[in-house]
Length: 390
Image 1: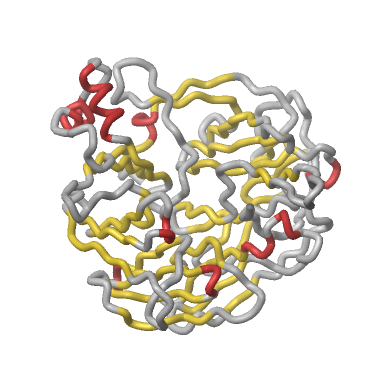
Image 2: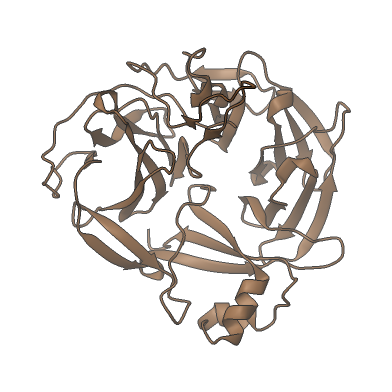
C-alpha cells in the first residue's frame, strides 16, 4: 500500500501557548495540534455554494460517479475502481451523457491503468496519468489520441494539477512514507504539458523524514500491512494558489501563480519533537474557514477535526451540516480537491437519496432531484464551490 506525501521547506518553529486560541496578526496562522479548542457548529450553505448534478443513466453510461475533473462545460468521471476497467465517462455540466471512452491496452496510444485524469478545457484535452507505466496519454474530449508524455527519472506523479497554460504542478509519490528508508529527494515539481519534461523542481529541505504510515510487524513469511489515513492531500488548490504540505516540516506553504512561496500555516509543537507524531493535514479551504485534521500516528489514526475562522482569528473543533436535509446531516469535507473554484466534489448514491426522499428527510433542490431518481440510477454529484461574492 502506498501513501502520498510531499516535501516542503523546513521554515521555522514558532512557539504558541497551548491554551491560547486567538491568533497573532501575521500572514500565517499558528496551529497547536496538542491544544483543546471549543466547538463551533456550521451550516455548509452559509459559507459555500452547493450544486447538485444528477448523472444521466443509460445502458452505456453506468457510472459510479468518481469525479476526476469538472470544467465549465464538461465533467470527467470514472468508476471507483479507476483505471482497472479503463472506462472514462464525459458528461456535460447538467449531467447529460456525452461520451464513453476506453483506451485501456498495451499499445503506444493506450493506457495500462490510470490514477488520475486532468482536464485542460481551454485546449479541449484530457491527460490520463498512467503513473506506473510512467507516461501520460493526451486525448481530445472525443477520445482521439493526440500525444504521449514520457516521464523520465525516478518519479511517480500521483497528484497533478493544472498550474498554467504550459505546466502542471506535481507531487512525486516515490516520496511516499513507506519508502522513506531509501528516498531523500524532492517531491514537488513542474512538468511540461507538451513533452512531460521537468521544467522546475522545488528545492525544499527538511530536517528528518517523518512518516504517517503505520506498518504491522512482518509475519513468518515476511508479509506486513501498511495503513494510512484516507485523506492526505500534499497539493491543495486554493483559488489561484496551491497549498503545499510536507508532513516532515512544521510549515504549510502557499505557492502562487508567479512562483512565490509564503508560509500559510505553522504547526506547533514541531513534528520533529513528537513521538508518536501528530500530523496536521488540510481537509478543505474556503475564504473564511480552513478545515484541518490533527492525526495522531496510531493504528486507528486518532483524528481531531479543526477549523480556523479567518474572521474571528481563532481555532475551533467543528461540525458542519448540510441544510438540504431536514434533520442534522453532517457534510463530508474531506473529498479529493478538484480545482481552485471547486474545492470539494462527492457523489450521493441514488438509492440513499430515494430512501431519504421517501422518509421526508430532504428539501429544496435535492428533494426535487431525488423525486425523479430510481434506486439503480447513477449517483448525484454534489459540488461544493466557493461563494460567488468573492
